Image 1 (cartoon, rainbow, N blue to C red):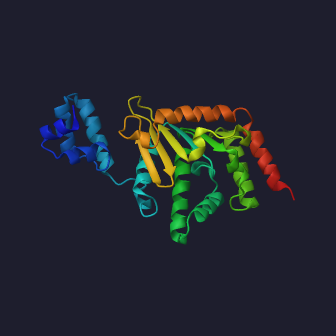
Image 2 (cartoon, rainbow, N blue to C red):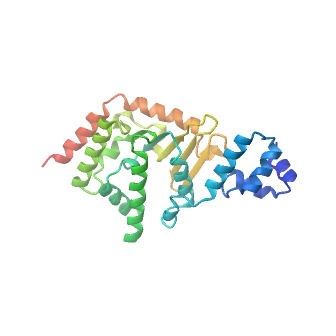
Image 3 (cartoon, helix red, strand yellow):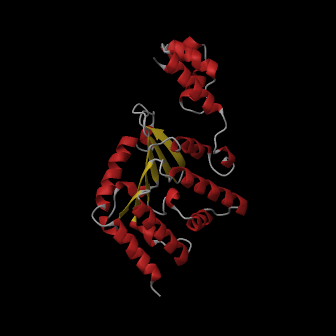
Length: 268
């Protein structure tokens, strides 16, 4: 069925259907029931499941308390992140947020903003730590992160803060809380090096992967089945690039590279 045909049959404006399908607005339970009838969904258990999901989606998100310090695009990402079973991420400039210590995170946030009031900075820091508590537990998603060697060599926050951060990465590796790879400088240029990215995978095989990309012009979310995904790259293409970078990282031991960086910081 086409969007225009469905909108006509439902007696809706085309823009209403597009806003619902793109997640810009939530669908009411009454509209959902009508839409399911039109789509021929008649199984009571499936209808009840979808209606329950629609009701849950209309409740305030746990992340809404941070709406004044993050973009609407990132809040949408956070809702999906909480439901992911696998999270893959790449960073070329800083340690990924979920792996940052509190002092390192504060230094990154303070350095990235031209001007940021202390209360807003503190709220962003609380958000980052809340996400870590949610996702780094034993029942959290599988975490795979790749960073460029520049990330572990740049002394963000000064030598003391960076030493603590590098030791934290080693602890995460040893505890198997996250799988971390470092692409060494000798690998040269590779596709992922351009900007920070995160790919979310979900338990439902019918749920398409979600790609989150941070670019100078702003954040973007795209699904594998989304129109215009070529603007930021498709999730499938990103996954290929991720595995390519992973292979480059496997040429040298991540633990050894981090320990070398740590040794440099510990020299008098």
